[in-house]
Picture (cartoon, rainbow, N blue to C red):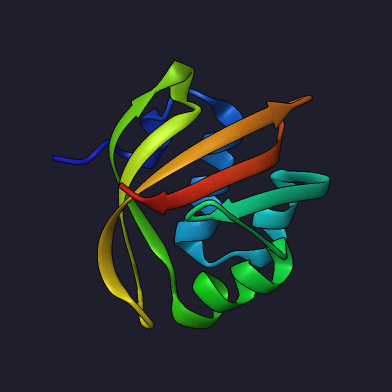
Length: 107
């Protein structure tokens, strides 16, 4: 059973996931602060390059399995055309209603 995106607790995270799942680059970058950062499996990545490769260029999609920390920590089944499907964890830092950092990796 998954959590519908519109029921995620944190509005900034909800906007990020909705934009990612819609493959909406404009909305996704609007959900991020200028200078937002991210890491994947503990390694710092170039955010725009990572999103282009792992999300927009390969039709990334998150099915949310659970949330914690007020909606800023998610476990999701993430799938894209490159890697298929895998269980992932996502930790979000929210600043002023936008995401300033996210960390993702296999769960």
